[in-house]
Length: 521
Image (cartoon, rainbow, N blue to C red; front, side, top):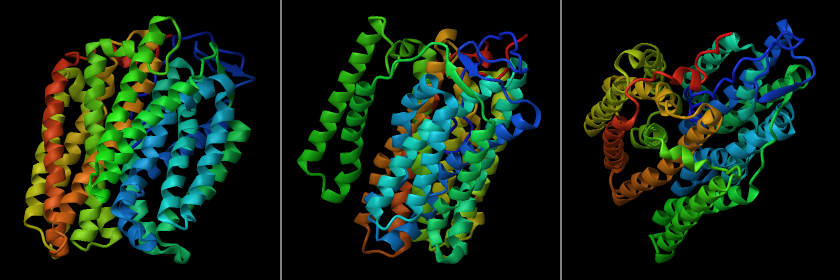
């Protein structure tokens, strides 16, 4: 996700800056941004907003839309299990690696300029994904698509900050997060409908090609109506840090994903150890840069705050669980139970609907009343939902209907919703105001990286267990595999419930820090 729950749900929004006098166009830019030229008002601002929202919706849909089509892609491109994992992981990994750089490029070169460039790149790579001739090409195009999204998405929230007065931002941000929740519901469904409909014989390719006309419309609207703005203080772009971080993460994730297919040779473990060593050296370099007064790529001092460290850990557990859960579920329902792609896509609707409802209840009703316990209840509820799904899986066969899984999907969705919306508010509770923007970006990046790691690690476990039962019927092949992945999810949620105890008891100061409510005039 993105600055949103790049996987598919609302994410914390960056901090709103202190109010400043309105400019002559009638909108108030933030203290950290300077508009170039008059800002849009009235219908022009509405069209600009629609352009921004259309771009973010495409990005959110592409986070989840591919999962339901993976078995169809597997047969169409003769993809291996490892390639399927990379199709799911390449996008969030590339997105996370480039997110901070994308945000800083917008501050430096202009938010509109970078937004349009990212949107053009996203549209072009969507077409490339839809026309990919091989599984390897699709994985590569998905990675480039993630980089384009990382240039595009940070500019959405930054532009909203510029376009709206402080007291108007809460409504705009609420619309943004609400749209993210709706996209979570529609992603798997749209992917299933497009794949099943086989429009013009395109099959799964339509899930990517559908972005092209909408992307072109968003580009045309952005060029005309989205305002240009830059940061007051020009940031430094640490390209060397980006490269080192990318090498470290790839050193861990690539052999972790490939190891099962190769039989876990010794070089796989050596590569992972080298990747960990590079990440440790990267962390030390960032710490030294910050102590020397330079602007680091990752502000390691933020992790000295107990709340931010615990919240980031919990966020990582949350999204590692979510990303791997959806990958394993869609493969199990289609390859294991023989469900059609449409039926498997519609099976995700109960989870998404209850997530959307309980996300609102969690952040607006429960968090102010019971504090951090809402996150503990959410983690335990999702664990209970996973257990219910596991019970249904244990007794399922090819004739099993959706109703057998419905209680588990509903309970799991409620638990995820109770966690996903409030977690950012608690995480940013003890973050200094001047570092709120960096903290929000780092928080979102952590979730994206954890999602890619979850797909690599739990996906490897899932396919390894399935391979061990390859001589059985499809149901017997995938039943133990999905049960193993659900057991991991339960364990991660129990750990998350314990980690939540380190968060602030109540989000007393975080509504402003998370940008949820507008500054008072």
